[in-house]
Length: 106
Picture: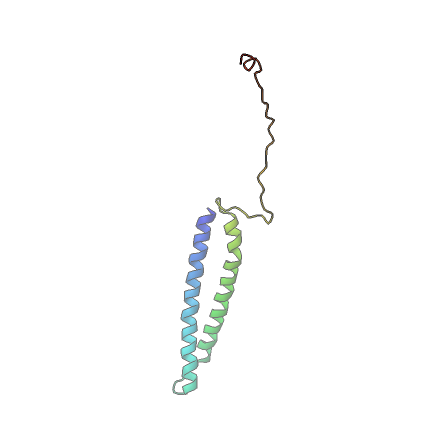
């Protein structure tokens, strides 16, 4: 479930970035037209684009901040500890028996 939620989250982030790119390009065109003074530009349109970019940026931040929690929810994710893992050594008692009767025949 969390893997699918992460996938949807990333797809949504891609869509938001695409929209920000488009709106930023439109805003640049408007600013360029303003400098040339050749076109009549609606101030409301410029404000709408700026506000939309700000809103999309906030949405992107929210989705980005939720990503670590989604990653932790994935089953195959394992949190790395800061302390090195030392394998436990098991002590075993070894008993050696020597058959003395077989050496007496020599």
